[in-house]
Length: 360
Ligand SMILES: Cc1ncc(COP(=O)(O)O)c(C=O)c1O
Image 1: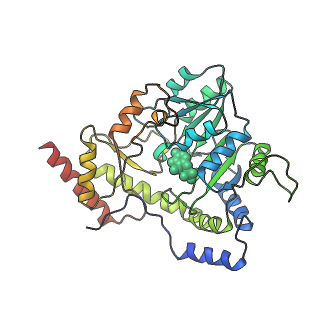
Image 2 (image 1 turned 135 degrees about the vertical axis):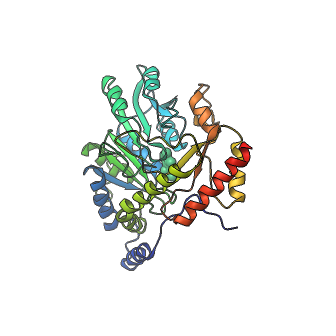
């Protein structure tokens, strides 16, 4: 049986043409395409400065270093996320402090953040999980009151917004990912978005061995450059992003209207959820349910089956009951823009049939 995939990058002739165009120029490393991609992406984050890099993880990593976060600092992070969010904190020598989520939104719970603040806390990394913006009004207020930096992990949330204000423009810095399963892709890639141009400059230096001018290295840096080939794909995808996002939202609305579930994904008033994932909760027998969906040709997966703080790489003993429950109950269904109405009907009918069978 043909499987409806959980994710499917939307690559067409335009992306292939753009790659061929770059290949013909022989400008294969970071060049004019990267610059143009940054300028064009900047329009989607209120003209903030953008620094294109080779992954979303690199974007987060650069933001932390450029903001001066390092040994002795504590950084508040969710545990219900991809490990990259916390990995970068450890990579700069700081300590991730794991905080529980709001079970409705799956994003950091502002009340829990308050309890985790100590004299060592320097920053909060907020994850807009599944494409839903976190409660930025409350989180930015807490950050202001405690002089903390805010870094948005917007890897899953391109052009999500709150009251029209786009994610990536709330904090001091933000990181987007262009991994193939994300709402837009460049193959691999990421974008660091900075509030201050002086910090953006440090990110640019760090990306390229500490150099702005060739062989005049100002600081110690990495090679985290994006290639023009990837940027060319990203530029085409960026043009398609508004339409692809509308499709995701339409697909999610269709699923919410038709799936036999008590609780559909929560979207607060004024919030634009861009549905990187359409995620439901199954209180019992999730693994069995997931297997049955696969047997019925419906791709699905668990984001995330493990609490990041319990991974051997962190091994923090904290108890986070809402995070634990989410890791045991969530299941994501296909919502990508490549779904046809027929696919959606199939997802709904097979899902509802399995629910009915389980109930009987
Ligand atoms: C929440 C979150 N943060 C960070 C990343 C890292 O992005 P990348 O895979 O582009 O390094 C991802 C991507 O998987 C993610 O989902």
